[in-house]
Structures are given as structure tokens and as C-alpha cells.
Image (cartoon, rainbow, N blue to C red; front, side):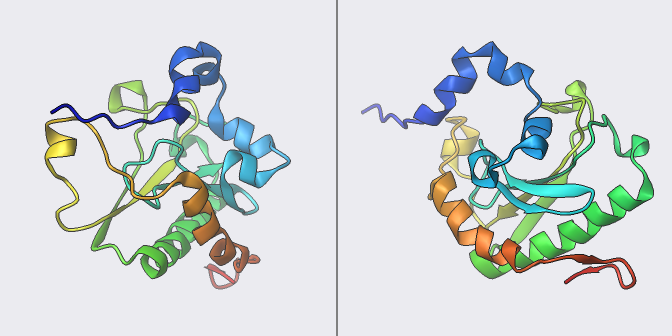
Length: 173
């Protein structure tokens, strides 16, 4: 028996080359409505947003507002804020999802797998023991148990509680 998994939200991306031509991070940085572009938090130099095509529930990205291809191009204050946001994001994801671990990292350059190679960003992916199964390895399909809307609703209140970056102690308050 052949089973089908439907992902209708991806059709717009697959059939519309213009969707892939626009930098999703620049579009999100400039958006007036955070929910429309899945932004969870806006800091001074960087922001946190959901990945529209996640590897697991809670898959987030942290990106600078400016369009740089590499962290080597960004000033220290941007990288420091991204590091602080990484720490706070890991704590929030652990509280909400209770994963067994995380993958964090950047794909710098198209050869490294970056979908938007000219705007660097950091992925944070919650992981659970046994979450790699036959669907992922043989079927090249990922099973995500909640919609992006549900993920946003679960996480946004916790990010709303982060009000500012206190540069004197490096903590987001």
C-alpha cells in the first residue's frame, strides 16, 4: 500500500521561482506583521523566526537584519546578540518541547547547503532519541507532528517575555 503525505503549503515555493528569488530573511526583517513571516522575536541587531520547512517541531533560525553572506562580514555586536539569542532560544525550546538534544549550525555558501547563501543565519533544531527513522532515511520524508501555526502559538508568548538585551551582563532580560 502506498501512503501519501500532503504538504500543500510547499506548492507556492516549488512552482513559483519568484518565491525563491526573494531573500526570506530580508523580507522578514522588513515585515510589519511578525506572524505573517513567523518572526518570534526582534532584537536590536538580529531576530528569531520559524523555519517554514522544518526538520522537526520547533526548528528555528536566528538571522541578522543586515544582508551579509558570512559572520566574518558582521560586526561583533551582531554576533554577540546572535549568541545571546541562541542561549535564550535553546532554553525556551527545552522548556516547551523537552528534546533530548539540539543541532545548531550555519550552512555558509551554496556548496554547504545554504538555501539563501547571501544572508547568513543560524539553525536551531530540537532532536529526540529515535527521531531519525525509515521515513527520513529511506523515504526522504520528515514527519512534523504540529503545524507552523501551532508552533508559533506555543513559542511566541515565551519570546514576548524577552524584552531587551542587557549588554552589561550579556543576558537577554
